[in-house]
Amino acid sequence: MSSFVRRVVACAAAAVTALVLTAGTARAGDVRGSDVSGWQHPRGAEVDWTAVRTDGEAFTFIKATEGSDFVSRTFTTDWKASRAAGLLRGAYHFARPSVGSAVAQADHFARTVGSLGAPGDLPPVLDLEVSGGLTPAQLATWTSQWLVEARARTGRTPLIYTSPNFWQTSMGNSKAFLGYPLWVARYASAPSAIVWPRWTFWQYTQTGTLAGISTAVDRNLFNGSLDQLRALANLAPLTGAPRTDAAVTGPSAPTGPSAPSASSGSSASSGVIGSAAGRLPGAVLGAPGASVRADGSVVVAARSRSGLLVTEYSGGRWGSSRPLAGRLGSDPAVVSGSGGRVDVLARSTSGALVQRSRVRGGWSAWKNLGGPMAGTPAAVAAGGDLVVAARGSDQRLWVRRYHAGQWAAWTRTTTVLTGDPALASVGGRPVLVARTRAAGLATAALAGTRPGRWTALKGTAGPVSASAAGNRVVVVVRDARGALHRRASVSGRWGAWQNVPGPSGAGAAVVTAPAGDLVVTRVGPSVTVAALR
Image: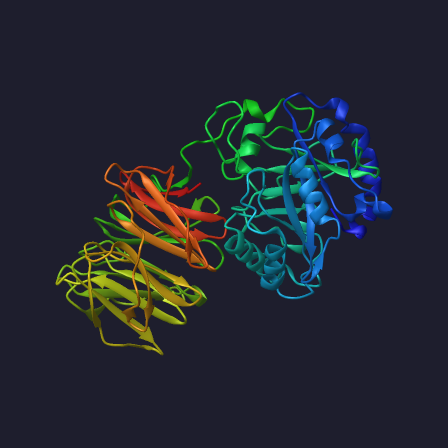
């Protein structure tokens, strides 16, 4: 991409690779593209994007920003001209971890490129080539913060651009980012997915040639069909095939540009990315509760005949679980806190709210918090407090806060509910989503323990779940037919309802992980985690 140091170090290897991977070895099904920056504009020379498109390129990635304040002088021109020429286009940010915070750099990138939601726009890219002197652990934290903020600002799951050597040495070969699509730079006859299950883009040379560009240029291969790339760029398929997201599911991976076209592979259309079938000790009852940790892993709790099961899902794998004794009268709510803390809350068989906490590896006993509860509670960590909302036996909304090491008294509000509420934390402030008698499905921010003005969402009937990251809130409803519907807001502005594919099952606990929205549900006796497209 744009690192001069990387270009010098890789020069010899690239020269050899260029002899192996040439345009003449490509098969008709290969989906190819370039990536450009100011390097492709020597002395102000322009790129002839029409000629680039005519040369067989389907996409391009354009450098937009670097660090906390640099904007590529050629970005705006290339951004507009590449689209006018008919290319699918993406923008990337060159990371400078030693210059400014990750959040500031992500905000700078988002201000420059916008939402990347227009037809033909590919997801944002974080270009990781320098560590800035950070340790692998520090760099992993910095990277996570950039990715989460970029997704919150654009609503799209970013790609990670990196090389095998950089990831192994500077990122400690971390497996914490497997939910983000990989764009790998490897100048050899075959790509490497590093620790990922598969790669999405492969930069196979930096000394390529293209009509319309007067300098050497990076060349790339997409790991999928043109229709899959179009789906990733907010466009309908050309062939009428169903839309799939290659960045999530991944097609069959070719071994290089001369391999058979990846269009001969297939993507899972169900969206299922993990299943707990046969892994939990006992059949699951009811609907699971879920919460996301800071590292992106998902904490899942569910009832079983042998007790409450609590486990984690990360990188496509489930952790171990041991049943916790205790009979519950509702499905659980789960909250993940700092330092590995996990809180599970539910209604007891007597109707009171009960809580159990795990701190430093050990579980507390069940604590009775009282209250005449009628349904499944909702809980969220917000502004350093633990906030619980529930439908009481009088059908009113009841709210309670855990603040400064102690529980405040229950607040019985005037809001009458017709279903169980959901909670999300937006900027440290709890936000309610619930079915109310007065406004139907609606949302309201909590001020202390009382809701503010309710805003109607006009949703369908069914259990509701909510989650948030940054300034984005997502609400998921499962209707009577089992279909999932999603609606999201960014900075308070709500989009339209969307029908989304997902597994049929009981409940729909939505969580917003770094890699995107996930729905956790029960299918038969097992728990399934699925990515919402």
